[in-house]
Length: 369
Ligand code: MTE
Image (cartoon, rainbow, N blue to C red; front, side, top):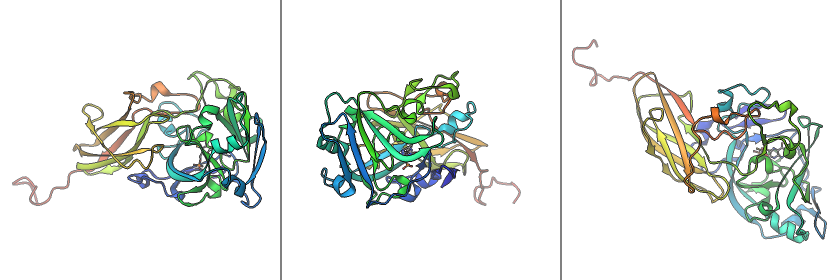
């Protein structure tokens, strides 16, 4: 793993290790934390459900398992800071980790639908948002507070939103939120609250720092240190995006045929319809082959056979289209924001092209041996 910070622990897998893998092995799944990793005893863990409900609940792990049929689905989590390095290249973003394209990973999650738990608690009609709270107290919040988030009630009631206790067929490990985490496919990873211990049905979005103040898109001139609750655009559904994983930016490759690999992700209610790849910096394009989407809420893997031109460097560019005909924005410059969120500009891999190796047969006649 490429470790950005030890405390709190923040790490992403090397890009090459992700290429062509529909599911991310648990030990290669990116890890994003704002406070200490919680190691909780599944025997004593419990979940409180309250707020605008008719029947407040306290569920043990066994009680949660009994609250609905267990469902398994493959879903991709993507951090809002994924590909921040591309924004930092435009203009520095002090105090934020330079994530590459690896703050995006896919697993098969098993749990009950959040909707089943909310139904058991008798969710009231006036509830508009569902809030979540975890025990990890973040010193990065102002004031320091336990991590929390909320999602609109309409999203919370959808079948893909799970309270999960298994990841890739094994009990959810502590680093990824075990014994139980929320999984909100299609939304920024920040809403998939780990170690969830309290669910509150609310009339308005959660006042928690990570909902009200952080994970908001501020205008380029704003001072993030001065931003308060409600400033900027609250991030929820993720935007159409794609990444080049192999060969990756900065790699050294021989000239000639090469297979490029990457992922594309359409976000909420959309499908990836096409990925284009250019081996000449965007002058000409070819269509990549799509394949290996492990599920409706997961990324789409792509591959493209390209020809790397001889010369000092080659610039590979990719761009994804969704089924509404929308295309990713071309430039990171136009997306720059003071916290470095939501970079979904066309990814570019600048490759160093190795000098051509001539064999004896290739060598031009009369050239020195
Ligand atoms: N939940 C808690 N309790 N604490 C956190 O710091 N980080 C969030 C989310 N849930 C976080 C959390 C963010 S920003 C992301 S991107 C995902 O968890 C990352 O999940 P992972 O570490 O399993 O990859």
